Image (cartoon, rainbow, N blue to C red):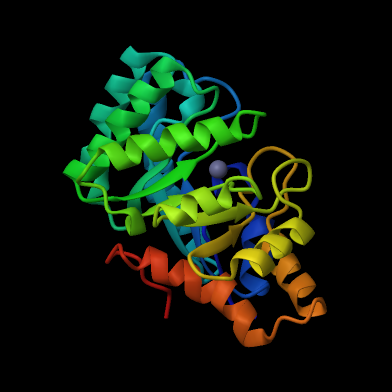
Length: 268
Ligand SMILES: [Zn+2]
C-alpha cells in the first residue's frame, strides 16, 4: 500500500508516529497550520510555529524517508482578535518561498462570526496575491452547513480564485455535494470521536464517486489516529474496492491536487 497523508498536525505527535506512517506506506505528510490547543499570546508565537513547520518538522520526517510539507495561516479559532490576525498575516509572505510550503491553510470559520469572516477574506486575498493553493477548515459544530456556505461564498466572490486550487476539508454527507458542485476538491477527515468514521467516509465515496475527494487523519494533540487513512483503506478492501480504486483515493487524488504546487515532490 502507498498513500499520502494530506492533513496531519505532526508537531503534536511523537516520533514513533513518523515511524508508523512510514512503515504503513506513507509517501508524504502535509501539515496545515493549526490552533495549539491554547491561544498564542503574540505574533512571535506564530513566527516560531512557522519556523517549526518549515524547518524542524521536515528534518524530523526526513529521518524516516518521509517528505514533509506545510500550509501557513492563522487558525479560525484565533481570528477573533483582528489586530493579532493582521500582524500574523504580515509575517506569512516571506515564509511562502520556503521549499515545503504548499499554500495558505487551514483557513476558514469556527463559530461563523463577523471577525472570522473578515480574517478569512484577508487570507483568501493573501493566497490570491501570491498565487497559492488554499486549504479550508469547515466548522465541526452544528453550523457546519452554514459555515461551509459562507466560506464558499467568500471564495466565489474573489474572481482571482480558481476553484480547482482549493480543497475544502472535513466535509460530511450534507456538505460534500455543495463543495464538489462549486468545482473545489473535498477532504474526508477520519476521526475516532467526531467527523467521519471509516464506514461513513466509504459510504460518501460510494455515493459521490472518487473524483476530487481525498481522505486524511487530521491527527493532532486530541484523540485522533495517525494511521486512520491506511486503516480505512483496509476497510475499503473488505467492502470490495479494488487495489487500483483504493490507490486512486489515497495516493493519486492527493497527488493530483497537491502537485498543482510545483514544490510538491515525493521523496525518491
Ligand atoms: Zn487540521
